[in-house]
Image (tube, rainbow, N blue to C red; front, side):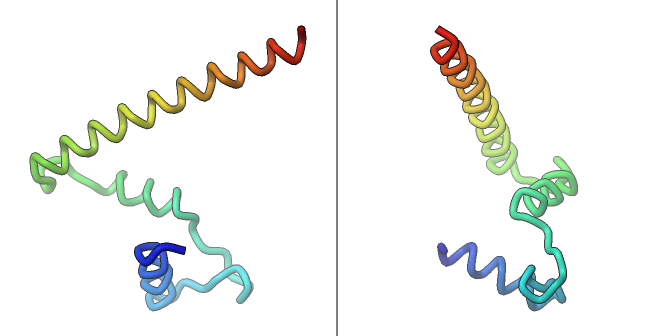
Length: 80
């Protein structure tokens, strides 16, 4: 586990979130990132951060499109 992930887990734990082992469900990393993105307001972000968001969103879309194509290709190969 990377240092940043460990720090995030420690922060969550210090804010009252408990692990699955303790019987309380916590938000996944994806849910925490989504909550951050949903709460972000353009006027509060620097130009550099807005550009980084745009680039990462486009990169993520590109990856999703490529994976979809690979899945379809694998499906067609298995059907042949």
